Image (cartoon, rainbow, N blue to C red; front, top):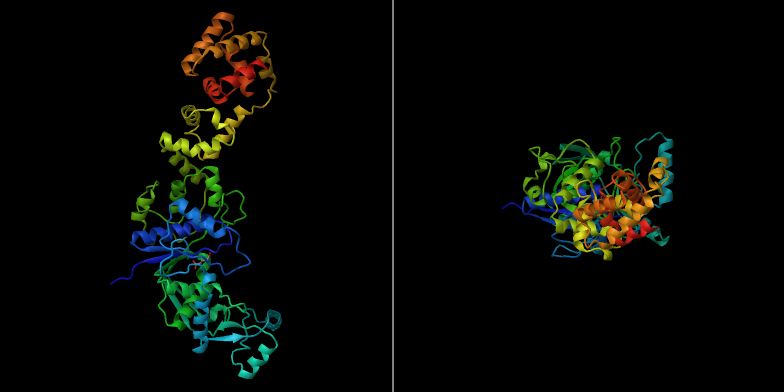
Length: 480
Ligand code: GLU
C-alpha cells in the first residue's frame, strides 16, 4: 500500500506570516489535499533568541484566515506530537546519543574563540573553504574528563564520511547532487546548551512524524545534503524533497522583508482589506502555472488542479499591482451583504458608523466598489468629503463667492430640511424648487454647494455627497 501523504509547514516563530511563508504553506496544503493527505503545522522554535512574542499564534491564525487549515498542530495534536521543537528536546538528545554511540557523531569541546582562532589560521594558510579541523574527533576518555573539569560544555558534531555522494531527485528541479565534501566540515547537530540545530531537528521530526514530502524554499537547498547525510546515518529513508524558487521583486531582487514597496505580511493585508481568497489565488500563481490560462481559482479548484510538476523552475516575480487587481476582482464578486461586512471596518476608520443605517452604508460603499482594489482604498475618498480641504483655487473661490450664493444656500437648506429621504429624485426636486424660487440655477447653483461641501470642484454626484455627510452636516456646512 502507498504511504499516506504527509507534509508539513514548519515556520520558525521569529516573525509573522509573510508572502514566502504563506506560499510554502499553501503549496504544501494543496499538495496534501490533492493526494488526500495531511498537513502538519510544526513550530521550529529552537532559535530561542530570535523567537518573537506572538509569532507562532499569529502565523497559525493567519494560515487559518487564508483557509489553510492544518490537520495537526500544537492546537490540534494527534499522536505525532508534541509539535513544538522546544518540547521535543529529549527526543533529539536520544537520537544524537545514538549517533555518538554508533560512531557517526562525536562530542566537541572547542570553544567558539578557539574555533575562530583556528579558522583564522586556516585562512592565513591560504585555505579558502575552511572547515572544522576535527580536533575533538578522537579524544581519549582522560581528555574528555579534563575538558569537563575545566567546565567546558560540549556540542555534538556529525562525523561526515569522505567523498560521500548525497543525491536526490527534487520535485521541482530534478536530479540534484552534492558530496559530503561540499558541506563545510563536521557540522554541529546538538549545541552545547542541549538544543538541536535546525538540520538535525528537522530530520528527526520529519522521520518521526512520517513526513513523506518536503516542499520548501530554495534557500534550504544547501541544507538538504546535510539532512540526507543524517538520514543515512540513522538508517532512515528520506522524504521526497522539492525546493520552490525564490520570489523576486520588480527589480529582480530577492524579496526582502525590508522591501517597503511591497506589502510583506498577511497581517498587513488583513488590516488593509484584502480578501483571503484573493491572496490565495494570487499566491497560487506565484510559482505555479496551471495547464490552461485560467486566472481565477477558488481554493477548491486549486486543490483539484494543483500539480507539483508545474511548479516553476525560475524565480517568480511578486507584482503588487497584479495582486491588487486580483483582489479587486474578488471584491467585485461579493454580494451586498458580504461586501458591507467586509468594508464596514474600513469605513469605520473615517466615519461614525452609528449615524448611518445599513442601507445607507451600503449605498455609500457601493459608490466605490468597482474602483477599489483593497478595502482601505475607500478611506481616502470618503475622508476627502468628510474632512474637506479649504478652497484655495482662485477660480473656485470666485465661483463659491458669487453674489447669488448666500440666497441659493439659504433656499437649498430650507428644501433639505423638508426632505424625508435623500434620494436622487428628492434632491433633483429640491434643486428645481431652489431654481424657481431664487432664479439661481445650473452651475451657479450646484458648484458653490459642491465647493462648500467638499472643497473641490469635482467628484461623485452631489446626492451621494449629501448621503455621506448626512442632511444635518450638509445644513451645518451650508449655514457656516
Ligand atoms: N523552520 C524552517 C524555516 O522557517 C523550515 C524549513 C523547512 O521546511 O525545512 O525556514
